[in-house]
Every structure is written in structure tokens, then in C-alpha cells.
Image (cartoon, rainbow, N blue to C red):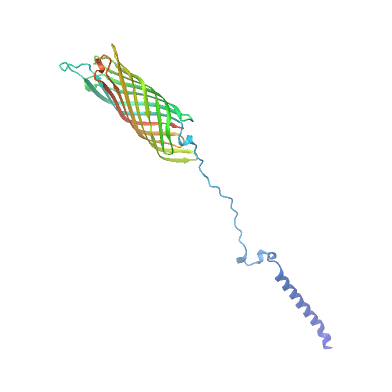
Length: 306
């Protein structure tokens, strides 16, 4: 009687224990991936990392050889300085002055145009022209109206003898013309003209101090120099006579130059120019002793280099 009443309770207890056992077994054998992340404690949840796009580092374009050593340069310069002029009186009689060579000087201005281009072979052409003027140059000699005007032209073949990372050496050679004209209202010589046509050799070293790359365009700081030597026959003339002579020229320049990345350049330099006219054919008149005309001054230059 008693066992009949407890049988249903025993059966129910066995079924409950079996269900619990089955549930526990399922929980231990279920794969970890089946668990929902939201059901895990926050400390064990994987954090979502933000997605990053690949980073691109910008780099300046590599400059071409034409940017590092531009083949073309055009400049215009203005100079201010002192012009010295010598005049031979042609008089060797000390008892009847003035005798010998008379020297005078005055402030002077000069303008210069220069253009140069090199081909891929390293050979090129260049042109240079200048004009200069000095007023009242013989005022110290008693003249109330005097002037000295000069012009020059140089047309040469050019060659880049050396060209590396920090140095350039262009060499130029070709014909040149040099002419001066002096007037003095009190002189018996009238307007005195000296003219030379000859050959000139030029060398212009340039040391590159620094270069900066701006997306393939180059800015540059450099120091430079130039020496020009010319020689040739000359003529000396005035209103009544004309004599043959010989002459040589010597010109130099030293300075600093800056080229902007967009091609413009500017420079500041010290220049000097000597024009010597030697003995004339008749050994008399205005060049008997030989004379020198000299200019020295400061030049400011602007232009383009590309």
C-alpha cells in the first residue's frame, strides 16, 4: 500500500534527475562559438578595432637633370660704380703742358643683357651686351661738358667643361666688339673713339652651396665668378684722323646667386672691366703711351633660369 503511493513520486524524481544530467552534458559539450558574445561578461568580449585605410606617404618627385642644371639662363643686370678714363695728349714737350697721359674719373652706370643656352650635348651658345655711361668725367681737368660712353658685344660658343652635384664650369669663346666714345668741349681732340674687334675667352665657375627639391623643382644658392680675356686690333680716331693700334680687355665678376623653385633668379656681384689700347701705328697722337679705361662697381642682376 505504501509502495503504491510513493511510486509516482519516485518516477518523477528519476525523470527530473535525468533531465538535469542531460542539460549539464549538453552545456559542457556545446562549442564555444555557439555562445552569444552578449551573454559573456564584458571583460571577455572581443573589442572591435577600427578599420584603417593604408597610409600613403607623399614624396617629392625626383628632379630631372634639366632642373638640377638648367640649360637656359637669361639675365638683365644694372651696375653702379666708377669709370676711369685716360687720355694721351700726344705731347712729350714738358715745356708745353699738358703732356703725357691725363687721368680722370666719375660715377658711372652700366646695363648688361646676357643670354645662354646649352643643348643635350653640353655645347651651347651665349650672347652678352652692355652699355655704360659717365657724365662730367673730365670735370676735374677743367671741362665744363664731358662724357664717356662705352658699349660691348660678345657672341660665343659655350661648353660645360665640368658639371657635377655641386660645381659647374662653363667655358665660352668667340668674337667680341668693344667701343668707347669720349667727348670734351675744351679738348682739341674733339670726340675720341676707340674701337676693338677681336676674340675673347671666358670661364665662369659656379659653386652650388645648397639645393632644395620642391616637387621636382629646384631652388638653389650658389657663389660664382667669371674671368674674360680678349685681344684684337684696334682703331683710335677723332674728327680729323684715324690710327691703327692693338688692344686687350680683361673683365671679371664675383658674386652670390639665388634661384627660386619657379625659375626666377637674382644675384649680387662685384664687377670690373679693363680696356687697354696700346701703341698706335704712327707712335704719336692719342695712344702714344698706351691708355687704360677701367670700370669697377656693384651689379644687381635678375632673370630666369630654366
